[in-house]
Image 1 (tube, helix red, strand yellow):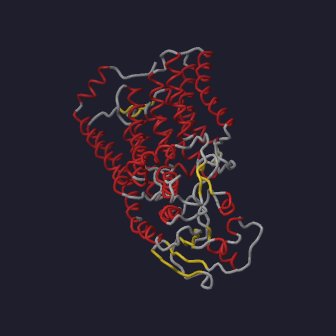
Image 2 (cartoon, one colour):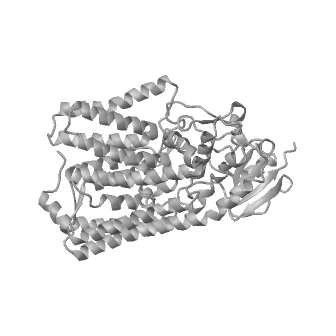
Length: 520
């Protein structure tokens, strides 16, 4: 049975005049959190331009003027949330607006799912919405993991619905579980894992508390996994897959991600936010102002163990362990209760939470606004490309990609991929990974494609052009100076590195466009 507060406590809470103030503050913060998405044509997220480029390719598939270098190959892949929804919506509102609406729906699903889960668990909403707003621009979301964000929102709703029917009939649980498993499988496989982990831990706790016999709990867990097993069998039979790259553990980063998670653009803001929240939680638990139910402890421990054990890259999904953090916090928050003794405590809590939300939101808004001119300049530069050209993307930096650089520069990394729409160009680092996206380079272009990777360091391109190649050089750039027509160099402006090979065509604060002399 799901634990609920007594009717007397609920009535007292509803009669509290400060509840109205909390609702108003939450509504204002929620509205403010949606403003960057509503007001920014292209949100300055690392992966967002690449996703937008893929949406253009999907929406134009079959049209007479479709890009000649790419083709669409559908299969039963488990990461197709926006690929399935955005092109259909784009028929009514256009690709750019449809992609932003998908992001907006993802944010609404996250906040709404956190509220719904808390309502089911406690019979009222209290802290879940604020916790969701704390994480609505956390690192995996602000980096543009759009299918995961949408999927996590769906998984929160799925957990809430499962808890509603947990004491219902076998058929009811089967239908609810099968619906959400199928939806999450299609949207994002890792979000399905979050859903399964939360429900599985909850069922194990119920068995441990003798709320259900162990054999019943085992049957329930089999019920949870059965739709997944069936979908995986169908996927294998239809030549589908879950990603295509290997697995990689980066244990040294796990302690650091805890302080990096709150903000995708500024390490100082993120670390300060985490420290403020940890200190606040310490005093709240010490004074018994914040309490957690036993099942919440089980969920927290279970997700903590998953975070430690799961690889950083899992079946081609990067930062898999990092994605567990916001999911775990929002789920566990539903099982926590806040009992504030007086108005002073209420004011302090609202001030702390609002301050952290506003600090992170202001950082996001500032970065996104700073990119409007650069994105506009980049789109204008596409008009200077010959239609149907091949476009390589380089960087004036060293090409290293540690997770603690100046992340305000990252949103430019995939922006040149939009040339596939504006100039019908080929760009090698458009997302075309088998098992994750339905877009493929045509057979004659596959040797030049890199389905997952950022800009190439200019120092490496210069060495190749000078004849200093080695066997370790990726195949798609071994003869770049003869295979590509244009080169975008991202990063701080620098002198032309190859004046005998490159002719400057356009430049902005964050890029330079060169035409390549393709002579032998």
